[in-house]
Image (cartoon, rainbow, N blue to C red; front, top):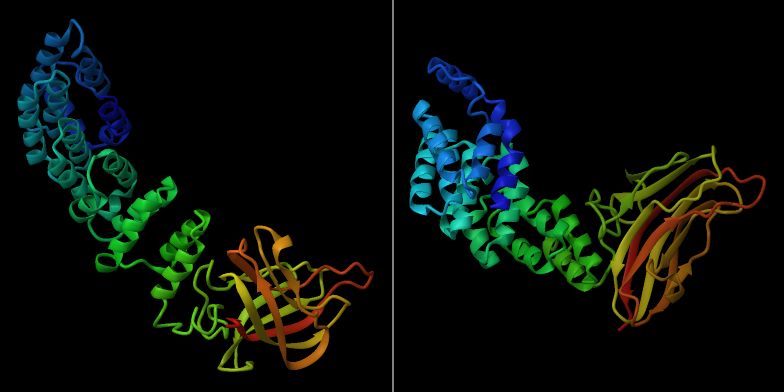
Length: 398
């Protein structure tokens, strides 16, 4: 009962705003009754009497309200709730059938009928009525209460997906529900169901990858990303564990593509025509206004234990100060396990290959690769100039 009343109470503001209620009030007045006699507040009060000494009186009043307005889906639902609370399930079923016939697309009616189905153990009815709500993208405010009901049903997640979840956007919202609830098993089931029903976009995929990483499933996340992007980046996690290392495609949302953010004194962008290989590269432009501490060109890479080789090409033009730009690779969870900074480049350099071999220990599951600039400690510290990065590779030494 508590679940039903909570949902019922949360929907009253919406119910009160309907123009149909104004018409209902006029019909009540025609019978010489106060327009507020069967207001939502009064109906709620009558519902509370069902379990007490005044249960008979409450039922009579709700039946009287229905006689005054027999075409009201809400009046039928009110009586249905009362009959259900009084354990008269046959009468309650009839009332909700009439309510649904009068308001087949009304989300309030659908939800109240679903609540009754849930309480009476009618799984098929619960799924059917909530699915009707989830079909409408304009009813997104009802999605989470519907998913909460699903989470309380003793049904396999696969059955809920097949019978209770229509296509996007409800399918995407259902995955986000399990992500936000931190339920890996259910989230995985929804993710595996999506491709045949409502393929995930880049943003949702990024959210799921980040969710797997938070739950210490880094390898599963990287392999899932590999499978998802195999057509765009077939070499990923084969020869090169850096995704989009040549910047030939616009970055997808992190964690497994580049996260590129400009700052107050540095412009970060992919540029065409200036490249070591292919058509694109990454460019940083420092405007000379600040002593920049820059760490906003990064990618997370899942590695296994063993020996690795990092290669990249860097080009600079008139980079000033004693602190230029450098590649930095480290364990973001515990840098003491791995923290390697390659030589910093200042001044002018043509495309120059950077290379470093390093070992990954058993406790490092993921590393962060960044093009960075450390703040200078000297007086003349406001950096100007440009730098380009291209052809970034991270491969195992077998």
